[in-house]
Length: 498
Image 1 (cartoon, helix red, strand yellow):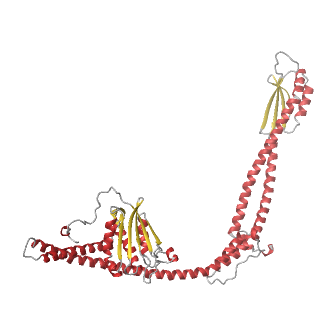
Image 2 (tube, rainbow, N blue to C red; image 1 turned 60 degrees about the horizontal axis):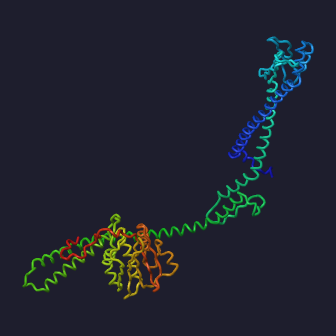
Image 3 (spheres, one colour; image 1 turned 90 degrees about the horizontal axis):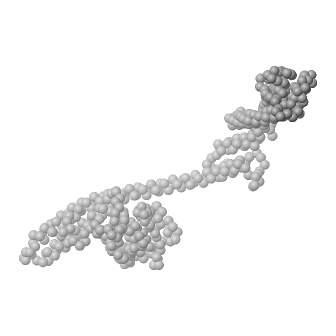
């Protein structure tokens, strides 16, 4: 098998880096281990020299002191001549009264262990004065030479071992990894979107389930990737189709936005003649006030004209506020006033769908915190949906009650309801059960309520219709009287309609 290897793999960047890292790591380990080994051997050698000196002190010091005391230079010289032949002992001197009595050997080393031992007489006396000093000099240069020889041997042996191990690792790496990586790379380079390429397999024995390694995992992933490419292509085509549909829906939203701008302009233009009608009617009432010749029916008609003009102007004002693109402004809003303003917007739809709106407010002083226009938009959408789903002559209930620190507003219809599958997607953008719907109304309502730190929930009621319940933060009950549109003022004192 080795003869079939691609020898070019050994000249690649991975092989070169692998060789370099192996050599550098081996050199580092060799230096550290060699230094440790040499240090231990040095300590052992020094300990042996110190043991020899200690042996001389324990075994021969008394004999040397005896010969010095008897002044027997011949025996003394023979004794130190024998001791100086011990390993690493280079010189022994006997010194008495600052004079060398006997000497054997010469100091040949630059680095030595110098030891001096006192010589005392053997006979017991009251005061022991030393007879002299035994001066031992042990050389360390032979020790260093022996260590140098060992260093060269260790380095050469380690270098040979390192290169042999590196070569074996490279051969093993080529056999187990590199040749398979080349095949995997070629296969990945030829991947296509058709999904008909043959499955990748490596030139080795199939692995058992409990012996799967990283290469097997990569091969499995590539084979799965090849089979998924066609599926991804299909999903991409579907996504492009959905994107085109979304663009069409956004274009429809743009047309709706344009119509809102037109509606705002129309509302502004209509508001001017309504103001003029109200002004002229009020002027006529003031001019004929107290005139007995004016028929009462005329005054009544003028009052009705003023009242209806002001009411129409109020509706126009609410519509303009509803469709205006103004920044969100949060504040305390009276729930009753909020429902009243929204009902004005829905009067035409109420007549169109022939339904009735029934309101039930547990406490007319209940308030919520939020943006009035945005909350009107939510109520408008929910009530319009309820009207579209309800049969003629049916009732749509609006019930408001306090729920802890929140206000609960529930809108209930007696329509056809929706099925369980559609209920799961009811707040999903672009999901709709209407043939001409965009599927954005309830999604926008959900987003607005969430932005108000509230909740918008849906359920099917016992009549088969739909219940939408809004939970909104409650306003301060001790707040001063809310500044809503004046409802108790005389119609003649309400001022301009614009």
